[in-house]
Image 1: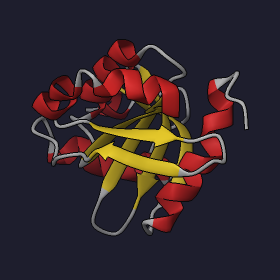
Image 2: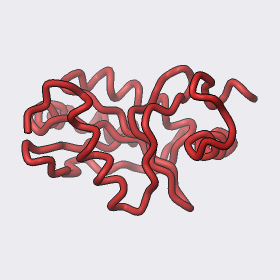
Image 3: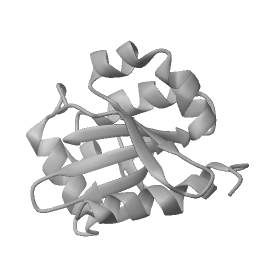
Length: 146
């Protein structure tokens, strides 16, 4: 499995999220950005930013998502994740996890996520509702209504 586009990361990461008991939604807006994948369960909300190589940008985006999610992840192809792992302390300092997707579509967790230090409970509930299609149109961001 070659990862020429971020889209190629979507199926294995979505499957991994489903395997943890979450309903998976694509391209949900959070504060003017779009989380590539959002997983919603009865007691947690998770956002994943998919990137082929630019882990710094992905980390910034994942940090921004933390206001509305319990866990934020960056998912990358295994070689890129290995390069990002050299800066594992940055992920750990922010509480963002790193997922590495191998060439067979397997998902590994070299850096676990921590509970979001920036979580705003009302934003989390709004995002969960948006993901379920109950509150916002796709063009609105989670906090625009507040």
